[in-house]
Structures are given as C-alpha cells and as structure tokens.
Image: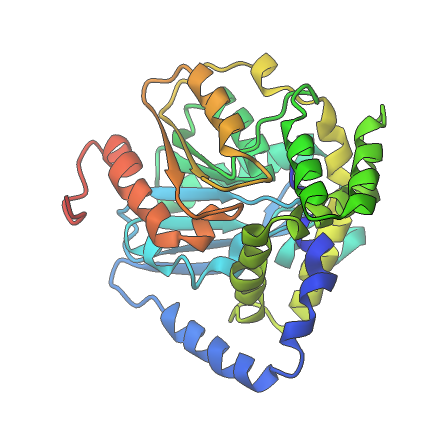
Length: 362
C-alpha cells in the first residue's frame, strides 16, 4: 500500500522547480482563468467547515448543481486532491465535485497546524468522511452522492460504501487498495524483482529485511519503502514528476507557503499507516448494496490491478463493473482525467441517474 509516496519522493523531485517562479506565476494565472465557473446554475465554493470539532477545508465546484454529486476521498495519507483542480476541470461539466482536505492534509493542516488537528486515527477520519457526506448532501439538496475513493482513501471508501448505502448512489474505487492483513506478498516480491533486475542489490536487501519484520513498518520505514517503490518503476516516477508535483507547483489554489505545508501534512499524517496492517477487506465482507465500480491503472505497481480484480470478482452488488485505464500507474485518474471521466459518464452516470449521457459519443 502507498502511504507517504509524495513525501518520500519530495527530495528526489524538488530540483526541477528551482528558479521557475516567473513561469509558475504565468501558469498559475492561466490555470486560475480555466477554473472560473460563471454558468447560471454553477457553484464554486471553497471554505472551512466545522467537521469533527475542527475547521476542515471543503471545495464544491460544478457547472450545474442539477448534475450528480461526486464526493472524493483522497489518499496519502495527507495527499489532498485539491492540487488536481485544473486537470479535472472537465469533470465539473458533468458532475458537481466535492473535494475535502482531511484532518492532517492540505489546507486543513495549514489552517491550524499539527497541534490543531485533534485525534488522528482511522476511526476519526471515517466519522469525518460521514460528516462531510452529510454536509454536502444538505448543501446541494442531494439524496445520495457518488463516492469516489482513491488509494488510501479507498480503504475508507470500501467501509463507507459497505455500511452506508443510504448515503451513496455508487462506489467508484481507483488506485484501489485491497488490504488482507499481510497475507499477499506479491507487491513486496515484485518490488524485490525490480530492484534486483536493476542491479540495486543493497536496496533489495533493505526491502527484504523490512519484509521479514514480524511487526508493522514504522512510519519512517514506510517512507523509505515507498521511496524505493516509486524510484523502481519509471511510469510511477514519471507520473509523480509530470502529474502530481507539476499539479502542485502550478496550482492556483496553493501559495508557496501552502506547498510546504502540503508536504508537512503528509509527513504528519504518516502516523496513520501502521494501524492499517491488521485490516482485512475480505473479512469485512464483499456484499455491497449499491453499484460498485473499480477503475484501475493497468500498470499500477503500488495497488496492482490483479489484486483489485481478484477482490472485485468476489464482490456481490446490484451492478458492478471493472475497467483498466491503459498506460497508467498509480494516480490513474489524474494521469488520464479524460479517460476516467469517460468511464464515469458511460458506466456510472447512467446508473445513478437512470438515463444515458446522450452527449457521449457512441
């Protein structure tokens, strides 16, 4: 599972941004223009809302509030999706997109710092997600909303979808994590194989030693492990450079100070990951009382499509579909946002609205 991939990779990828402040200012201004919403029934709200006893940042954006509502649950931990606003601008023509910076992440972390985040636990963030869902439903007058969960967020997502079909019209997992209390070692073995094939025997020995430890990895060990995972796969590393870090650097929603806080939040949130070692998705159940979708990168080495597909095959749901996004690693929805949108429009939207999207080409 990918816990602190961006924080672990920051030192690898920081150099290319040096000395580009002028170019950054031009790009941010252009991106800000792209983000403008001035349609009659549009919405563009970004504010702090009292969730779980602290101020948490929520964005609600869309061209028409009559469109289906998506609530995103981001990964990391601490890797807010607000940085991808420009890349996913086209989504807002067909859905109202609700983005939330979890406690310990992004603007929520920046608002009150490490001392103001309150309890940092999976259970607390799970309750926060429910409160954000209820807030969005009330604000938008939506009976139910589409839950889109990514990476670590999909750990929350499975549990939210399984327990609360009355709140969600469909579940969409991407970069889908499947936790099994450590039974499946295929991701670990694949990393070892890549390192050995590249002649990085010292790194392979370190990874092998971490894999033999009887206790869960510490946050620092997890960061080292994730850094090696990213560096071992060219497509993942390229995605981090071209998609993730560029999105953060050119985000019109993030000042230079907020970029620093973004990474600080991920480092702070890493304390969540050791507790997940005992989670077991199959033991929790594979019956879902709502439409169930997984859209996974076909070359994801962090949350491999084979593991997601194996779990998906066991799922019982009123409707279920699995699709691969080609030439995509982790962060598949943001490397290929148009392909992801096409899947949302052709697979998900007709089910949750009861009508086909006629503007999608056959």
